[in-house]
Each structure stands twice: as structure tokens, then as C-alpha cells.
Image (spheres, rainbow over the protein chains, first blue to last red):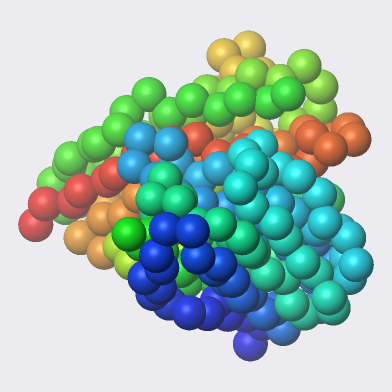
Amino acid sequence: EAAVTQSPRNKVAVTGGKVTLSCNQTNNHNNMYWYRQDTGHGLRLIHYSYGAGSTEKGDIPDGYKASRPSQENFSLILELATPSQTSVYFCASGAFKNSDYTFGSGTRLLVI
Amino acid sequence: TQTVSQSDAHVTVFEGDSVELRCNYSYGGSIYLSWYIQHHGHGLQFLLKYYSGNPVVQGVNGFEAEFSKSDSSFHLRKASVHWSDSAVYFCAVSGSGGSNYKLTFGKGTLLTVTP
């Protein structure tokens, strides 16, 4: 079964530290996305990718970097984590433009 | 740029009741509309989508949604809800041009079904 797997499921990080959130998909989808979910804001797009080697800025990219080394893997990197980045992060994949998305189960990040 | 609004943050109904979750959008061009469901502690799951044709689309588990261009709406409905339908429902919109194809989500509506 096609799937999107995120790791870790939970993470506690210290302010100023580096955090890497990983996402792996077995769907062979070209497009991958990183969203964060916060109460009162719904889901907001951070970065996305059209395929291996490409990354694009979403609506709230500040403080985040992304890396897509292969079709299957898409990472979100917080070089200097801040408490405002405490959130639940979701990775998703989509076959092509306007296709429906398959989501991972999320990573709950707490920055202290 | 597309936007989507879900006017109800929380809806509570009894099991067996019908329910309508509202979604309004704004976008000037061709539009894709979809609904996703999120059970507590899980990721989002696709329910249904509309792009063209019959304005009433059917999804999984008895859900359907109706597109209205005149009202800029894409409301989700279910005739008889079950306790397992309790979840957060997200409406999403994407356009057809340039970078607008990415999904923009509403803030979600929490549906609570009371036994």
C-alpha cells in the first residue's frame, strides 16, 4: 500500500538547535509538501518540491529549509529552532498538479 | 491567489442526524475543490473532490459535496452521521495556473457526533 512515513513522530528540541524532520513516500509521486498545523490556522504550506533536486518556498518558508535528494525523500530542516516553531508538521505527496494528497501521520515538535 | 473559508469552527450533531459543513472560496479562474478528514492524532485523508461536470460529487462513507459557482461554495453533507464521523474536516482549494495548483486549506471544522 502506498504510504507517506514521517520520522520522528515526536521531537523535543532546544532553542537554537538544528532539527531535521524526515519524510519518505512509496507512492512514486512527483510532488511533495511540508505543512504545519496550528490551532486557529489550519494547515499552512512551508515548502514543496516538484521532484528530486527541486525545492520551492511555500507561504511561510522563513526559518525553514527543505531538501529533496530523491523521489522518495523530502526533509524539512530547522537550522536554528525557535519556540514559535513548536507545531505539528505534516508531509504529503501528490502525483501531479491538482491530484489529491496522501498525508503522513505527522511529527509533533516541541522547541523549549 | 485562492482563499478558502470554513465559517463553523465546531459543529455538534446527534448520531443519525444529517449534517452540512460549509466551505466558501475565492479564486478567479478554474478551480479544484476538495475535502479532507482528520481523525484525532492522525494525518489528513482525502474524501472527495470537484473540478468540473456534475456539481454534486460523491465521496467515501456516504459523504457528498455540492459545488455552487454563484455562491462560491463547496459544502459537505452527510444524510445520517455515525459516531465514527467525529473528526476535523478541511476544505481545500487549488487553481489551475502557475503555482496556484498547490492546495490551500481552510482552518477546519470539528464535527462532534453525540451518541
